[in-house]
Amino acid sequence: MNGATTDEVRFVTNSADIDEVVRHLEDCDKRFVPPLGTRVDIRLYAAKLLERAMRFEAWHNGRLIGLVAAYGNDRESGAVFITSVSVLDTWTGRGIASRLLQDCIGQACQLGMQRIVLEVSGDNQAAVAFYANHGFTTGNRAEQGIAGPLTMTLTLRNGS
Image (cartoon, rainbow, N blue to C red):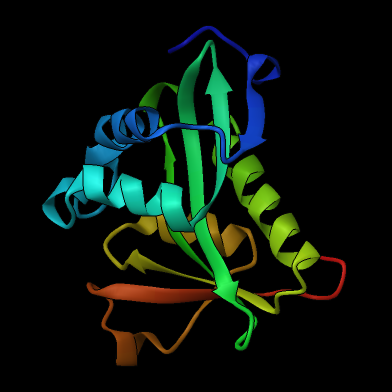
């Protein structure tokens, strides 16, 4: 386990360049269910994130260790869509993802959005539990298929 503490982590938004995001996503590839590289070209995906997404980042010693990326441009529906949550293996279990998710929720509230939506593999029970612990709820599992992607939603209250 990495001996550094979370006190040494810097939390910022939209700071990483494409190479840093690519490296991070490649390092976290196998933590995604199914692996991210089996679903997208990671470099093209990273470029899209840099161009269009709000990025909430955790850094340690010049390295991107955690990332939450979300699209918050659907003002008509009032929804923010989280497209990616990732933390390097050596930093999991230290609250990094929770802090980044809270930063994302705070930004969504500041933008006056009404909900945050994401999809997660039904096979990824750890991720489903993580989001549920942060107030996200799932739709009807029978309709969505337990093994397929689940849509999870967090309804935001004014000032959440």
